[in-house]
Length: 436
Image (cartoon, rainbow, N blue to C red; front, side, top):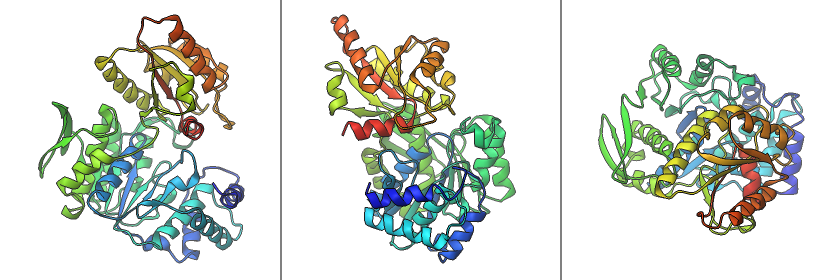
């Protein structure tokens, strides 16, 4: 990130005392002062949910681009550098345009209170409005109803991926209340895609859709997907598709891919050609979602021949999906599983680790560098032990890798271990920046 961009982002952080304050008044004011760029955007796929929304956005983008369409994308948070959040017609926004646009929003805002996410979302809309594209894939930051992205009056389609308990300090601890917040992106008459859900959140979402006459298409009722003979089979009311397995690893990615496909098929044939869907499944990229790391200094510090995986999931629902994917890998080749984990104090660490009981041999806990809300390695060790896992704190990820290397040397007859670095997108970003 350039010094100039870093400086303006630091200034923007000081414009509101709260990092998150869920109302729409401030961003609506600023967008009005900017000439309403949110009204000058290409057709929007608006995606909310607790888990899988980033992957669903990645699938949507890959499939649209595979059909020759130009696609804007807005996602958060970033892993390594802020400009990852804004993709203009297929390319990350340039440092110069990012700085220019942020400074323009800062100047127009005139020092008025506004959260960091709100003003940076306004900057993204301004950039999107200035570049031609065929579609905008727009990921909700937090919640839905009062999220800064929810100023879009009529998206082409709305998508709600699986809902679980997360961000309880902002959204509450009742799944029905969280579902109601997510369902705030439902708009009158706009098609709604509902990914896999438990009964309670699904009922809340469908009541909202019914109240707004938004036609709902529900996973498991209106569209289906499963793995069969090394292929992905997708089916909805328009027919059946025999597709390659997604490039992204895990059974949950079949569901995420299906949710993206359902959304595109509701948008019409220009967005959902079979060949484009197939190419998108093969080409999709989404870092830190069961990403295999194969080179770099971190790999060199680990045991020779070890598998090293990186995942940024940070709640029990994510952990369950990742644990299932790791168990599937075990069926193809048994290896001792070691976790290296760092987490924020706002997350349910006990529930996260419980998903790996009986699967992980050991957990090495670490601080997340530079994050004031990180569990200390010792605190996180206590949570892992309480979840029934063998664990020990480590000074950092490199120290954890050295500990695992020592174990491998002590067990020369066992296959090299499988190592999963997990627990936080912030930790994942640190790993990607250090291991490049």
